[in-house]
Image (cartoon, rainbow, N blue to C red; front, side):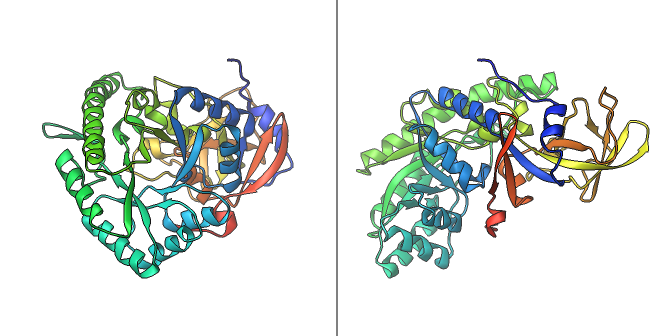
Length: 398
């Protein structure tokens, strides 16, 4: 497949009238990423992980592009309510909730005929949901979140997420849900974070080999665990509508599991910096932001205004934003990306001057939208639209 990745001059000319900082989505690259995600999903449906998009118009764009996209995986209950009010449906909430106010808000949407599915992995989650559902005279569909990490001796490979680590624990929670009259078990989710969220092309050969070996061993073990849990839950009489798995980084392995009915994908649409580090697939850098050069303290160093948009997670160098264009630009290790100024080292052919942009890529996908009220949409060499992010809508869920 042929595709065009714009260079520095292309974007500099395109945005010459725009005040920095700003963020943008190249819709040509975004569409290519969407097509590649469809190809990678095989015969599985895809649930859009909204945490990685955080823009209603772009979620609509993805859903309208192909019938393979079905439903949304939200990250906050009030986000799910907001999206429901915007006309979306089949809204899975990826993380457990306990707040009575949040559950009540979900119940109000469910009573309108909408499907919103909270997550559970403890009896207390289910009991609280059931208590509020009784008060609201509502039946809530729930999803059981199962642990998909692996333990190799003293090494824990994965994240500390769900308490459902065995078939027995899943069976016990399944039985408890059956006793709660205002709940029904709608689905099972297992996110293999150590496969989907850990790159294996990091520039460190020894580390890459270790990660690849751990992934290979973990993939086999977790597939068996997921299949056994699904079989056990179905044997109890639960009618599962979906079994969700995977992420952008694990599609090729997750689709081989017969029990999985859908993938959750989000980051692959934008393809942020962390997703440069995968051997198995490649998506294109569809999203970036521009910061303005305001200083030139010494030769080959250009200091930009703002830019310090660091990603969440363990504080490592790969959570910093990446200078993207002009090619060859780099951060200074001792300074990184700063809140009010970011020095960039650049020794390439572009003749940079004060007022010029430097284009940066965030390490993660949707978190960039927490810094900008809008995204400029670019297609065929033109700015075709400006759309609001959640922040631009006045929304701050976490």
